[in-house]
Amino acid sequence: MYKIAVVGAYDSIYGFAALGLDTFPVSDPQKGEEILHRLASGKYAVIYVTEALAAEIPHAIERYREQTLPAVIQIPGVAGNTGAGVAGVKKSVEQAVGSDILFGEQ
Amino acid sequence: MASKQVNPTRMELGRQKKKLATATKGHKLLKDKRDELMRQFLELVRENMALRQRVEEGIRSANTNFVVAKAAMSEETLHTALMAPKQEVYLDVDNKNVMSVDIPVFDYKTRTADENDIYSYGFAFTSSDLDDAVKSLADILPDMLRLAETEKACQLMASEIEKTRRRVNALEHVIIPEAQANIKYITMKLDENERSTQIRLMKVKDMMLEDAHHYKEKQAAYAAEEA
Image 1 (cartoon, rainbow over the protein chains, first blue to last red):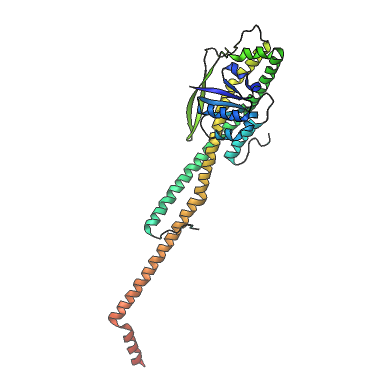
Image 2: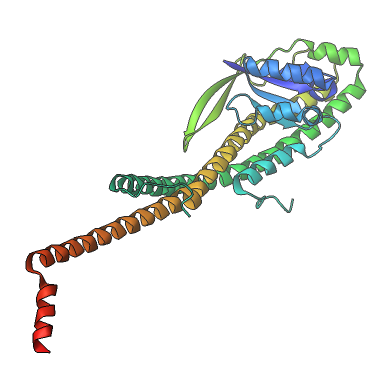
């Protein structure tokens, strides 16, 4: 039985606690990376990371990209959407097709 | 063309022909795999993008609701309200095999039977804005899980497509032409050897006949008689 985690700044993620997801508020990226690795090797199948935190630890996010589990998914934080999540999808297209033929105009 | 020297023998020829046959078959299969993966990937990635836009929009509005809720009550009350969650979400992970790519499939379960049992606080000291905020977040949770599933699937498939594409290209542009060039080289060399053996035998035969019948001497004698 797996669980779902949410990692990011407290203001961006406290709401998810009400839904029954495990929230891990972090303020400094170093700590965030540690927590991410710990969660990934634990019982978490899906880890939502705020875009703001993900931008600070790109290599840690990249590490889990090609593993089946966990799914590390970026979500926008309270400060607004940085477009990093959409960029991740575009990156997949680029990797598969060679160039972004689907969402280039967006 | 042949980057590596091969022995021009029949055994090596057989080996190269076998290699070419395997490479051609593998190339065809991998190309089919790539095409099918690509078709499924493009379908999935469109869904991925749509889900992502929906989830990001949902989170944005939920965050706005939370800010409003926070404005209406003290921070301590808010923290206390959300401190001990009532609900818990568990995931069942299953694997789906798509063209030899293992894709996780998530099935979520809530601890209490009622999925909407999400308000972990009494309604006396919190504002109704908080209820709205929690509700708006709960509404996008299924989409968020679906997003996690498709996004992971897209990432895994993208890397598999990349690998398959490289293999297809390597077979098409390196392995197959190399085997063909080798086969051509060996066939030419063997033909050449056969011709030279044939000529040598003819020559030897001529020499043996000459030894036995002395044609040249007889011919010379005949010429002298004529003159």
